[in-house]
Length: 288
Image (cartoon, rainbow, N blue to C red):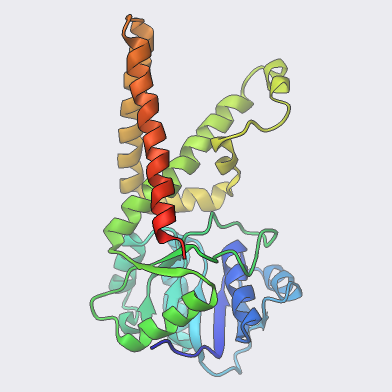
């Protein structure tokens, strides 16, 4: 059974938090907004994402912590201490460190359901906020063993209202997946974009603008990006080692210039194409 959401507090008015708020308000939920930057709240209110939170309000059905991973536990602990709501969740792109620190900090784990909507990188501004941002997208939930059904039901109502689909994972599974699917591409794109940007200006003019492909991922906010990468350091480093190992092998192959290079390169490229096909097949299998 899914709970009925009537009231919610969203803490953090970046792209993700404002998008969550827009989806909830569009469904008739009364949303209160909190951000350490008052201007962020003002802008989110102007978009129709809700109203500024007031201490006179009773505890909300749900509190969504949509801040950077490194600040989630501090914000969560403070919100629970002030009794802002009955059930709490977050949207951080890393889970292992967040969940472990929440336990060490003494947060109320029965009322906290760690989550992560996979709908692109967050940003401090609200330019890309959209009520439909999560439609059809996976929303990972990493529950504790003690998470009660009533907390699940409230978070299920959030996910359903946002049009997403719930995917349960352990924190280790989530962080490994996020490292490979989200964090590594972002980091590689940033390095490639930096390499391109440092090229001779005459060469840059040949591109006629931004080159197509992976470079687009590099436009993520560097402050938020560094926070996420740091919070998921181990899995990201493992993913980097895996990819750089393969790139090093290709570089050695090209430097040596053996007659078999074209065949070996075609095998590497075919693996890449198979990887894309596997992603497409997985998307087809999860499509509503």
